Image 1 (tube, rainbow, N blue to C red):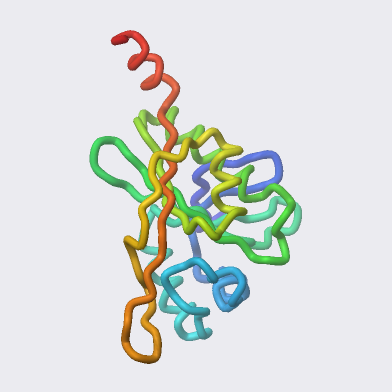
Image 2 (image 1 turned 90 degrees about the horizontal axis):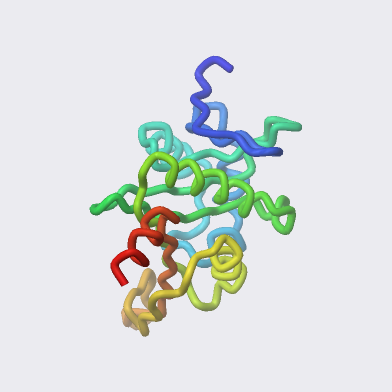
Length: 185
């Protein structure tokens, strides 16, 4: 597996760093309107995907999700580093592979690894209209901590007015951190 830095693996998936050969698979899902519907960007052109891939290769926060069976890269998980031993998690997957449990499987493996490595807290932000996303977070043991009303916008209407959106915030504490909290009660 030359030039293929593996972060971790699960039963069906290899979770690894991006590489240049991922361009076609990356373009396949980041150019899909349905996949990026809740993202702060529009579907990417091929040239935009190539530029985006260069950034993904340069960071360890974007993790490519590859099927062990076919070695096709089918999506990504974002594990962004923040203060206080906290990570932010996010994910996007090729629509052709939705409803197969790949997002849950990859997130679970990365969450377990992060907590084993000493991360204290992992959180996620999502659009309340993106029911699949927040249902996934809940299935992974995340708890909804906030519902911010009209706190962010990515787009403007034809008149130049912001199109405000709500945000759910979910979080999960490292089990060891939760146990320490109970000791203080």
